[in-house]
Structure formats: structure tokens, C-alpha cells
Image 1: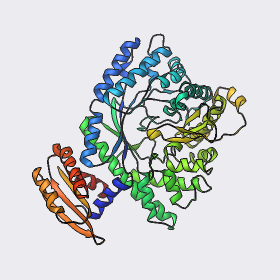
Image 2: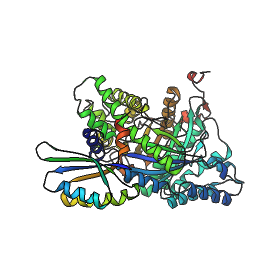
Image 3: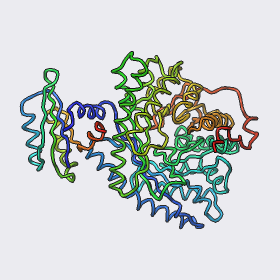
Image 4: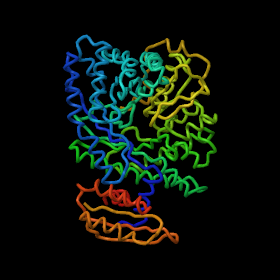
Length: 455
Length: 88
């Protein structure tokens, strides 16, 4: 029998330190659901999702009960919908909305809380369907509840599609306006990526990639609270001890993820894809990545030293987690979504954490500028410049970066936007007052960097 | 399946009697027990039990009701969870 202390340690992690499985995400390919007729395409999509995922929520709940581990979210990701739009006869915004409503209805029918993949990958250029899909996003996100969207605008191999960057600045602005009564909520469901990954289980950026099979189970673990509590026991110790403590904790967290992933895969009869080794915070007290950084000795997250602390954390999580799972993938790193992390919210409110520092932090962690509220008066061009900066960091460092930013309509620095639930509350952050309009207006493509030439 | 039942809380008479009666009434066989009193009066007991996986949800609910009745924290979890977390 297992040592009683180990058993109590596990129970303590779950009961007091917010250890949980953040998400079981079922990836479903829609490649065989395309049709020139939009109604027929929608019918195929609805039938496939509601058939494949019909037991997903129940299986998740059964595992939760039998193992006594909370599994917070059950979700679905699908093939980028641009593939479906491109196959339509005379695609337009109305048809895109029809498909999005079908996804919304199918996801609600099976009881998941988000469906991701209303997406387009345009890092090198647009197809007709991709452009129409992107143009439809403000309408789609404002008129559906749980559909999430992502657009990939750059990659290390292709460079950055600056036409797409310019377009996304405008689309984010319009999406915020379309949901102005809800603080620009549509923008919380829209991610702009560079180097998007194909097997990410986390929302809003999940989609079922081109290279994936018909269906797959990906699991995202969590546990910032567990890491923080483990570090409390090594106060004042040198960094070698800090890294070792994080690795040990990440190993245990990931083993739990691996167990849930293989169990879910077996029970659903769907192949296991990957475990995503991310530390994903929630607004709950004690479930914050910022507090881990502060536990390392920083007075406030965002002060000088934060980037180094985050680099150590991110690396140690991967080193500890990678041996605990047979397949590691997705985004795998520490998330720093401002509105979803109690410590980040506090740091921003107290003026300790700026957008410039967040940008620096995204160089050493997954993923990017995430869930950041900015003044409603921010121009589309400024949003595009922010996206371009993040995409450049991703492109040059061969890593995923993302921007999920909310220009909260009618709000300014000092105001707070409340998104509710896991999305939390975001203090509106100040931006540079100088413009990059002429920079964005150039258009075209930023060439791929030298490090893309690896062959 | 084999599951681990853990009972933790302030010590009082009758804890083992109540928990093991509930397990017996639900056809669960106790394979191993480890019980100790930590820091003067904190009762802690870990039991390894054999049970049907189909009744886990039902028994968990009954254990939760018992837990609030006697003011203890009680968990029922598949043994596999601990094996995977603590054994390579």
C-alpha cells in the first residue's frame, strides 16, 4: 500500500491547493463535413460533433468521481472552420454565422462549456474563405455563446502576414463594439496567434490541426497553487532547490493529467493525443502564477526580476512534466492571463505590472499577451502594432505567442471590466500614446527570419 | 476496483465504527488499514478497499453525508491515482 504521507499529500493538493485537471478537450476533424451547400455542411457538422462527443461530459464526470480529482472543463476543438467555408458555394458572412450557430448548438447539446476552432491559418496569405471567415468574426462572436475563434497571422517558417495583422486590429475593434454592452466580451473568445499549435487543449485558442487524426483526446493540467505551496517550504533556498521543487511538483501534477488522459481515451474509445503541461491560473485565491513569482522573492509580480523568475518557472515545469507523460504537447508553459489571475490583477491595479513588462515575460513563457483590457479608445492600428510585436517575439524565438486583448468600449485606465467566471476581471491597462499607423499601413509580409532556414 | 478511503479530522469515539459499517453495508471489503493520531488530537485513517466501480458515485455521496454528520473530511479515490502520482 502507498505510504500514508503520500496519500495525504495528494488529498491536500486537491483540497487546499486547487490542484485540478483544467480541461479534457476532444479534438474532432471536420474534414469530411464540407459541402458546397451550407445547410448540408451544417447538418454533417452537427451530427458528427453530437455523435463523437455525446459521452464526453459523462465520462469526464465519472472519472472525476472515481478518482476524486476535479475536472473543471470538458471542451471540443474542431478543424479550422475556414476549411468548411472555403468549400461552400458563394460563401458570405451569413453562411459563416450559420455554421458558428451550428457549432454553438452542437456544443450545448453535448454539454461542453466551449468549442474552439472557428479559426483560420493565414500566416502566409488568405484564401477567399479565410478572409470571409475573419470578416464574419465580430458578428459570429457577438451572436454565439460558446464558440471560440483563433487566427494565426505568423510563423517562424513563413514570417508575419502584416495584411492579416492589420485586418485583425480592425476585427478586434469591431468585435468589442459588437458586444459593447458586455465590456467587449467577444474579444475574450478571440486569439491572434503566431506559431499556433495543432493540439492545444486550452481555450480560446484550441483547434484541431491539419495533421491530426479523426478524433483525439488532449488534456490540460493545472496547479499553480500546488507549486506556490511547495515553494513556501523552501524559503530562502538557492535557485537549484527552487527549480528542483518545481520539477518534483510538476511531475506529480502531470502524472495525474496522464492518468486522466489515458482513462478518458480508453473509456471514450478515442486515441490519446497529448498532455499539455501548462500552469493555468484561475481567478480563485491561491491559484495564481503571479503568486508563485512573488513566492520566489519578488515584492510584486511585474517588478525587475519577474522575467527571470518566470523563465525558471516555465523551464522547471517542462523538465518535471516531460517524464511524467508519454506524449507532451499543446502550449506547455506557464500562462499569464491578466484577468484570470488574482495576483496579476492585483499587480496591475497597484501599478506594478505594465504591458511592456508583460511583453517581456511572453518571451520566456507560453503564451502571450492574454486577457488584457485596454482603453476603448485604442485604435485598430495600435491593436495591430501590439499583435505585430507579439508575433515578432514568437517568430524569432520559434515559440507560440498570442494576443487576446479587449479594447473595452467606453472604458479607460482606472476602470475594471468584469468578464465573469473563469475569465475573471481585468483592470484597463495604459498603452503608449504614440501611433504606429503608418507602420501598419505598409501591408505585405515580414519575411521569415534567418532561424527559419534550418534545413 | 481498489480504492483508498481517507478519513481526517478531530478525534472522537466511533469514527472507525461508523466508517467501516458504511463500507460493510455497501459490500466493500477492507484490505488494509493504517490509522494514527497526528499532532495530539487529529485522527487520520487510510483504508484500502475492494469495491465495484459502478457504485463509486453512490458510496461517495453516502461518505460525504457521513463526513458532515461526524465533522470529518472523508475521501474515496481510485488507488490508481496515488500509484500514478507517487510511483514511477
